[in-house]
Amino acid sequence: MRVHLVHARAEDFVSRAEARSFDVVSMRFVLAYLDWRSVLPRLGRMLRPGGRVGLMTSLSTSIPQFCELYHRFRKSPGPAWKLFQHTNRNLGQTWRIYRELRETYGEPGFITVPETTAEAARYLAAGGLRPVQSFTEQVRLWFDSGAEAVGWMHDSGYVTHSSLEQVSPLALRFVQSLFAAGMETFREAPGVPLDLVVGGVIARRE
Image (cartoon, rainbow, N blue to C red; front, side, top):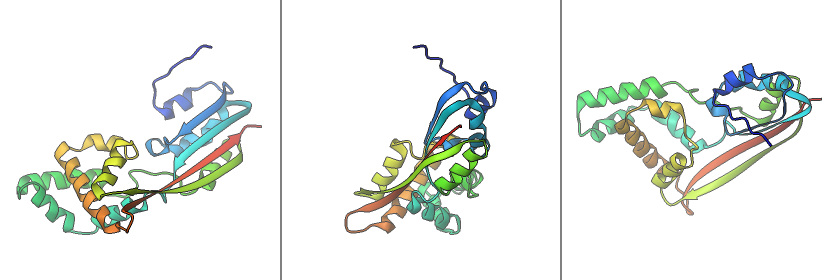
């Protein structure tokens, strides 16, 4: 068996791939990192007749606790005051980090994934594929603390994104501490919850 490895942006690889040259395309938890609205309809062209696409992704309803905190922090002056304290009340440093974070994360939508498996299936169908199977699963994880939940998000790669490389270490530590404290507001008797919602679609080329 010969294996040919290619290191390329997914969008570029899909555009350049030879038509009808693949039997299977597998995409697992990558939609947050690429332009999936343009990529998914182009996958059908890559497949031979009878070929399949297997897709697994987080959905937009996943990690609602983090999403709620994100919107809460965006609309509140509280984080700016906490940042001022985080920098030991250094006004210049506070302003630089605040501007850095606003430019990187100020607008919702810097990370997007499908809302439902039906939405992902529609984009695959636009490329001539027939969805044959789909599922949605929700899992609740429990953590002893908000800091542990944030640590899991980082260490597991769930929040891995190129935008994290654009902020300074001090700014990143501040964001982690801010979300760790925010996660404590969701605490229940078993601990701090984090809900993951995962969807999967299998589509076939006739």
